[in-house]
Length: 161
Image 1 (tube, rainbow, N blue to C red):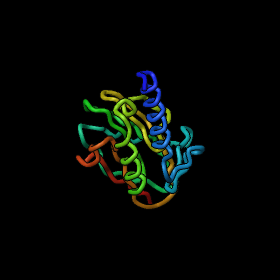
Image 2: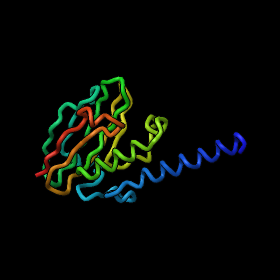
Image 3: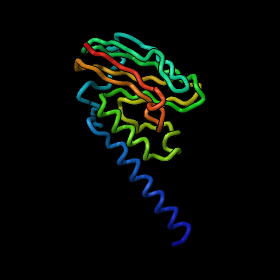
């Protein structure tokens, strides 16, 4: 196989992996609707919450919201590592972790418009935003699902009442 053929095959396989990775369970990518909420609209924001992404922790790590509330999350990455904030239930977080573990480092570093609507990537020293409307009461999690980050403590709890 020629070098060009190998490159094209590798590119094709990578694109298949990325496409499969973004077939995120529990989410309808057409609308971003999930079992626990959906992307919010700027006009509906009732509260802004600043979350600092440190080396391997979030501050604060416990949040409380009302059912129906639309929240603007401002994620400040004060560490030297790429981070993300993903909102979801335990099953969503686990699935997203598996997806992230299969992606190449290049895909993790991209400004990716194909991110699931319940996630935002934040490069070191920058700020990212995510607007979310909570539609169901219960306990959710927010986490950084870059390989190993949640295992080191980069996760938090959300209570929706």
